[in-house]
Image 1 (spheres, rainbow, N blue to C red):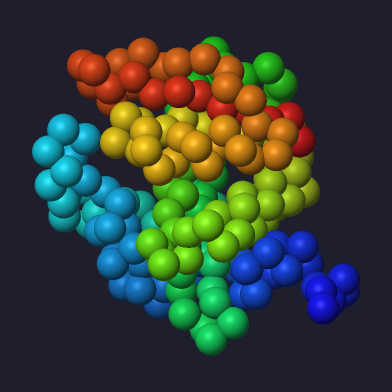
Image 2: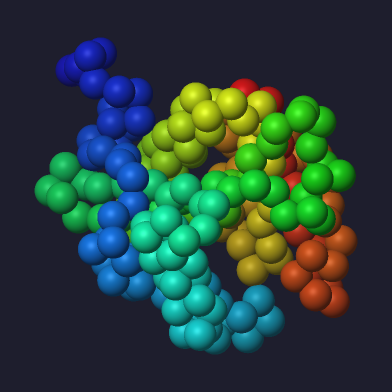
Length: 182
């Protein structure tokens, strides 16, 4: 039986989505390490994982403009993360409203994919961004996520492809762009 008093994002996967805390950073490393790989070789990219974790840590310490949320299972395990920020200048041509937010760094532990965790993270991001006056969410996903992330974004309620950011990730690194008005 579904408890309709629970926030919708909790009903999706049974856990909670909450703001990122400093102590979450180390717990996110194995999740990011699963997904952050070279697009051509599939080789893990530990330096990029560490850079991303540093950006998240800076956010948790109030040292950048990014906002992050983590998904936590009903057992208290950190199982996913998502963030948003003011859009990169290269993303602005894909926006249509006066105050867009850019979704960044969406990762879910492999064993929790397909269970509503990603949707719950996106819902929390949309609610928070909307409450702060953002008018749309825009995002891109690079070629290394063609077989994983692209299908997820194509199925997200309200999101539509807005074009392709050509060369966003270097030569051959075209990235589809999705957007949703809030």
